[in-house]
Amino acid sequence: MNRVGAVFSDNPNGEQRFYELAQKKLGAAAKNGDLVQRAETNTTKMLQGLLGKVGFTDVQVNFAKSAPRTAS
Image 1: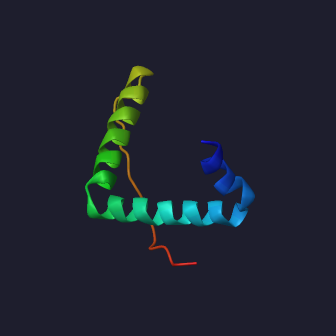
Image 2: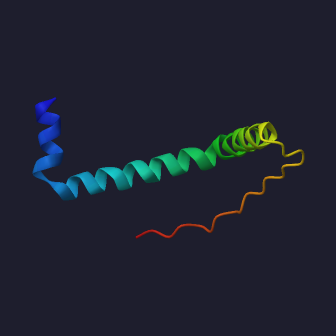
C-alpha cells in the first residue's frame, strides 16, 4: 500500500491524469449503459417520496440535458 500511495504523492500530476482518465471511462460507461436513466428514475422516486412525507401531493421532477463536454 505504501508503494501505491507513493506513486500519487511523489507525482501530483500523475494523480490528476488518473482522475481525468477515470472520469472519461466513467462517462463513457454511463453513456453506453442505462446508468443515466436509472439515476433519473431513482432520484425522481426519492424526491417524490421525501416531499410526499412533508405534505406535497404533486411533485414533478425535470432533468436538464447537459451540454456535450469538450476535451481539455
